[in-house]
Figure 1 (spheres, one colour):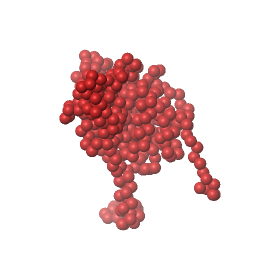
Figure 2: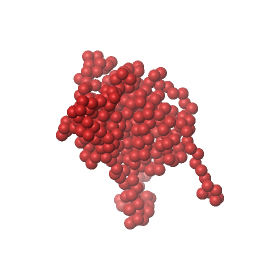
Figure 3: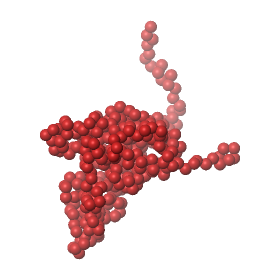
Figure 4: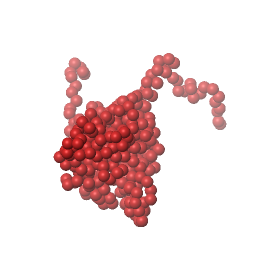
Amino acid sequence: MANNVEVKTAKYTAKDFTSDQDVRWCPGCGDYSILAQVQRTFPEIIETPKENVVWVSGIGCSSRFPYYMDTYGIHGIHGRAPIIATGVKIANPELSVWVATGDGDLLSIGGNHFIHSCRKNIDIKVLLFNNRIYGLTKGQYSPTSEKGKVTKTTPYGSVDYPFNPLSLALGAEETFVSRTLDRNPKHLQEILKRAGKHKGMAFIEIYQNCNIFNDGAFFKLSEKETKDDSVLILEHGKPMVFGKDSSKGIKLDGAKPTIVDITNGKYSKDDLWVHDEFADSPAHAMILAHLDDNPDFPTPIGVFRQVIKETYDAGIARQIEQVTGKKGTGDLEKMLLGGNTWEVN
């Protein structure tokens, strides 16, 4: 209330989050879809004045993202987006802090910062644009490129083993681990909304097509003829069903997943693995993260695991409040000049 007059906050629209900058990605790039879905969902996600929203990026095609969002933004240096975002959030916990990054930016030079952001549970949201290639620097293999990948830097095929981003996040105790697709806008919007509501670090791996240097890397997951048999949509509390006409399911025998036919009478939905994204142990989520290591299995998308626990930034605020309550407000000048000091002439 101001002067006994109720102040109403206008409802945002996608246009409110669209900047006046020309979008400079290659025509057909999957980044366009990601940008569009973020702008469409933000009016539902953002419950604070948009002046309190900050986008942080590193280096790469994905890292142009802050220019295209009509919010505050920082285009940082290579691999450092998570640590910059951490500093922003700790300095002002009231801010809604989002990170746009790529598989090279986050998982190569930025790997260390990513791991510790997961471990600390900073209340930031990290969108990984994973196209399994270095796009901005013209087609070198990246930390997520599959073994045997032929690129400009691996002309005879990569002998490197790729990172599994979800496995890495789960191992680092990330509290919201998810995956979606640039070519499934409805699902992408759903995951963005859920990540936005999560209190803690939320990690979204987005399979994104680079139509110039790695075209078709994920087409099997998005094309009409193949997607039903190639994608497993994870839903909490529901059995894992996939395939045309929902004819197949995933059954868990101990720690070993198997594909079963649920139309021939031998198995039914009651026999299938039921997804529990709030499980105490990350073991089942880790199995799902590696499910499609076997090419006969579908690729899971959705929320793999979600944990509710205190965030790092909230812990710092709580600690400062407790110490201040016991010792009072500190005096910075007194602290700096206390103890052994020297004057240098």
